[in-house]
Amino acid sequence: MALLYARSRLTSSDREQLYNHARGSNEFPTCPICTFDVVHVDRWEEASEPGSPFLIAEGVAHTACKRRRAASLSPRPAKVRRNRQKNIGAWRSRCPLPGGRDSGVSKRMDGRVVERQFAAPTELDAQLAAVAAEMVRP
Image 1 (cartoon, rainbow, N blue to C red):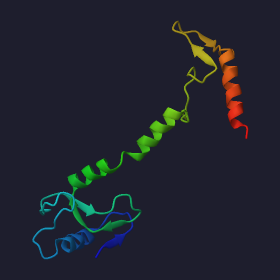
Image 2 (cartoon, one colour; image 1 turned 90 degrees about the vertical axis):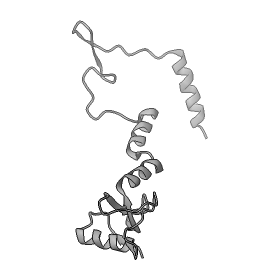
Image 3 (cartoon, helix red, strand yellow; image 1 turned 45 degrees about the vertical axis):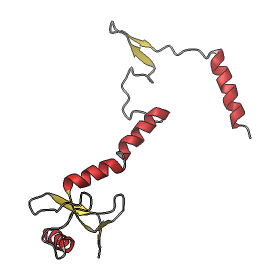
């Protein structure tokens, strides 16, 4: 029997009911990850299917075991997404600093602020534009 509930914090009564359900007729419940007993002095959490929108509490697991399993199953998705955005050039700062890379001004080492001199298009840029135009054509 699995308990189905939305992702929210369990009350003390719900945690007690889950502990007793996972314990069954044994003295202590067994951690499904490391297969050792979850003694009453151990820190424990609900054991569930990782990545599901609802927690399907099938038992109790040691907090350390659950965190170790979660870290090994998938990398931190937000960090992976941010790194990919930076690598493909899609990321831009929300608050760009004046005088930064994309700014029209540049601050010199002696403290002067001057207009940024953008490089004139070269022959290589024209060749790259021609290749890109050919790739877009059907």
